[in-house]
Amino acid sequence: MGDANYKPYKRIEEILTEIRAYDTANRLEKDYQERIINFIVNNKDNPGTNNPEGHLTASAWIVNSAGNKVLLHNHIVFNKWIQLGGHLEDDELISDAALREAREESGLRTLSLLKDDIFDIDVHKIPENEKHKEHYHYDIRYLMEAEEEEEISRSKESREIDWIKLEKVKEYAEEEAILRMVRKTEQVLGNTEGKIEGK
Image 1 (cartoon, one colour):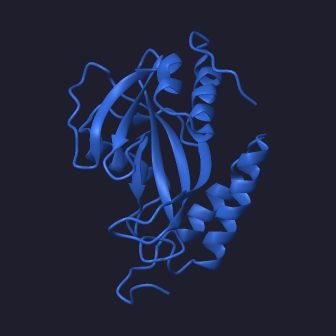
Image 2 (cartoon, rainbow, N blue to C red):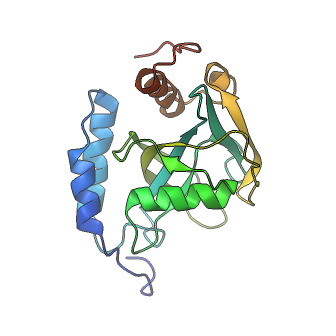
Image 3 (cartoon, rainbow, N blue to C red):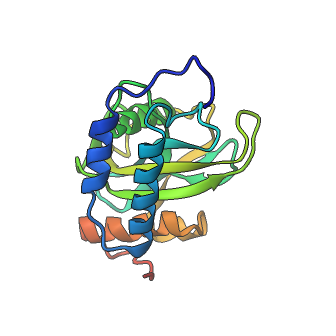
């Protein structure tokens, strides 16, 4: 399947173990978890960009030290405000990939994981673009923190990149996958200033 020159992921069993251990009460996430596990099990040799059906991806949900803003960017291809992230290298764990991608896309050096565990998971369809036909992203998200005062470097992946107050996120993004992480942030960090109603 895909390009014969791809490199299989060296740490796929560790990745599977982490995803299987993810504990969520959200019914939608439980469904995503099962789908992600099935995708990896059935594509252990090729869960990355050379798979035409879908890609395992890593995302960074980055909050400031006050816990009242999140760093989002307007993606150059999708033209929508989303979290930073991207694809895994063949020797990375998902959290490693999320950190690397976030640093590459923001230039932030103060970036660090707030929790070692998975923060959120999602499965979403990616429309056909100049690089790939329509496919799915099996996305694993991690909660991170960075200093808001640090200068941000906008990468070629972004039209814009900015810190957005939690209570204002719904003005930039309507997807449940984004609003769910806003609610989780409020729960984890105890910030109810911009509480968003939801499930």
